[in-house]
Amino acid sequence: IKACADKLKREMEDFGFPPNFPEEVEQVEADTGPSRDDPIIKDKSKGKKSKAVAKTGSAKYQWQIMKSIGITDDDEVARFASSEHWLDYFPPLAKSDLQSMGLHVDWRRSFITTDVNPFYDSFVKWQFVRLKERQKVKYGKRYTIFSPKDG
Image (cartoon, rainbow, N blue to C red):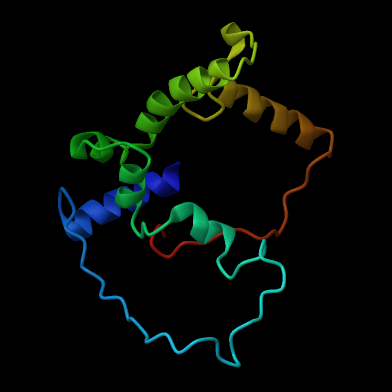
């Protein structure tokens, strides 16, 4: 959520509001038929496109992705630059989708599992303090994702 919100902020800073994205000119190659370098696809269920490419389609920017999922109002898309707006917008949609599939859930016990919910956040902190006291978790070196844009 935070990464997508930050992408939207950057896109509005770089391209304005509503963003005016640069036009990309696609290189169109003349179709000369299959060449020796092209893989021969024996099983038609396995194509050259990856699953990620198939899911995102032609959308390159987060703004375009938001438009492609049906959020057409530019002001509404701009609100998604705040990560809290994601938490207000999508849970009711997910709940209605689950109910439309016939899922029976005790919705009285639903809650958001981020630091926006102070009760959940304090529970997670309490749990990790207890685990550390019992030496069940250790602090040490581990892999992490670093983004030079986020510092």
